[in-house]
Length: 112
Length: 114
Image (cartoon, rainbow over the protein chains, first blue to last red):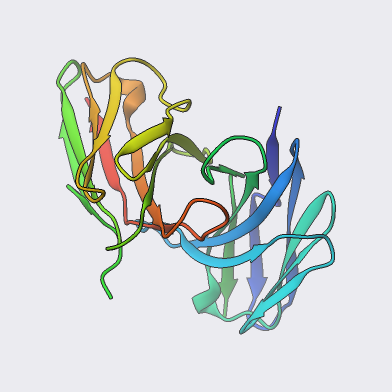
C-alpha cells in the first residue's frame, strides 16, 4: 500500500534554531514529491516539488531535498512566522491525473 | 490574480440532511481535485476532474458522495444523508494540467454534522 509518513508530529524550536522535518514514502512509483505549508483555518500553500533523487530546492529559509526513500525540509534560522503545519505529499506514476497521497504533517512552532 | 475559492466557509447541518459544497477553480485550470481533511488525519483524495469528466472517483467513501463540474469551471460536491463521520474540512484544488502541475488549494469548507 502506498504510504507517506512524516516525523516528528510536532516540533518546537527557538527562533534561529535550525532543524529538519522528515517525510518518508513507500510508493509503487514516485512521479513527484510535494511540500505544502498550512496555516490554521487555511488551505495548503505550495512550497516545492521534487522529481528525482538528489534534487534540491530552496526558498528563503527553507530547503527541500529528495532521496529514493525520503525527503527532508530543512529550516535554517527559523522565525516565528515560519510556525505552521508542513505537509508532504506524493504523486504516483500509476493512475491518471495527479492525485496526491499526503502525510499527516509536522506541526512547527517557532518561539522567540 | 484570484485563487481557488470555496463556499460556504463553514456549514453546520443535522444528521440525515443533504449538503452541497462549491468550488471555483483558478480560471483556465483544467484539472480540479477534491480532498477531505479529518481532524488529526492527512488529506484524503476524493475525486478528480479533467475538464468536466471525472476519470478517477476512487476516493469517494460511499455512494452518498457525488460531484459534478460544469463549464470546465465550477464544481459541486454533494453529500446526501450526512453522517457524523462526514464532519471534516473539504478542500478543493486546481491545476493547469494534470501531469505534474502544482495543485493550488482553496481555503476549504468546514462541515460539521450534528
